Image 1: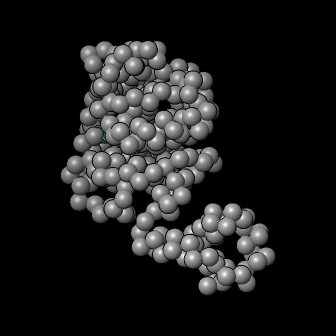
Image 2 (image 1 turned 30 degrees about the vertical axis):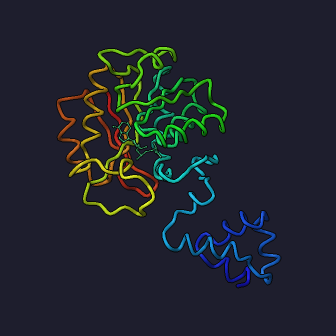
Image 3 (image 1 turned 30 degrees about the horizontal axis):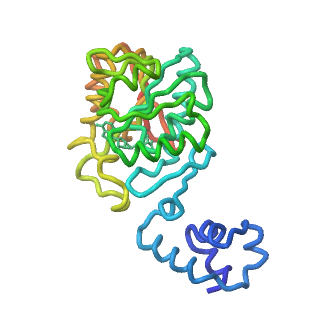
Length: 267
Ligand SMILES: C[S@@+](CC[C@H](N)C(=O)[O-])C[C@H]1O[C@@H](n2cnc3c(N)ncnc32)[C@H](O)[C@@H]1O
């Protein structure tokens, strides 16, 4: 197959740039050349449903490059609005202690740390996610500001690690000023986009709200001022009913596609 044919495929240009170590302009200038066998094999794997991000172990988020590997959720562009709201809220409240619960690859914590003055505790229950988040913190050079720890929502496995980083633990819950989270929030009946990303990153019970509800209860009990939580676009009504009379105020926000993507809560 010639380069010009390959470039018509989804991810074709990206795969060739990586395999040949050439830029896009070079590919277009040399599009009569034959594509190497390796690139064709990669394309076949991607077409069969294997995420291209896992193949090259890299993903772009908020204009930065991050490490990713199979078993950890691939960050989605839709989550960038959560980062933007997070940055805005941290600056507005002048917060110095933020928790990114369910951090996965760590991208939310890292971007908020890069764009504000706050320290961030990034937590997850999955060992694979913790390993990837730790690598990304080193890759993006924010080790001073972000610490990754194992925790079941706000219940840390080792409270000493939390305290050593300058945060408090009360009643076995991590205390902070602002909670940011993209938790699992998909209904259990949903069909995953591929079988390689972990179930634990997606499913939140029958209506998808089990983890979000637990998280809000824990954050309120631990005395957080505010929270920004990513949600599914169909969850606004059910979550409104849950939040009413429990928190001081809440406001839903949309992603770039104009769909409800998150909620900002003041406790
Ligand atoms: C939707 S992913 C979000 C990952 C990342 N924040 C992002 O936006 O790309 C949800 C993450 O929550 C983690 N998780 C699931 N249940 C958890 C729990 N009970 N406590 C802490 N983390 C949990 C999963 O391991 C997964 O990394």
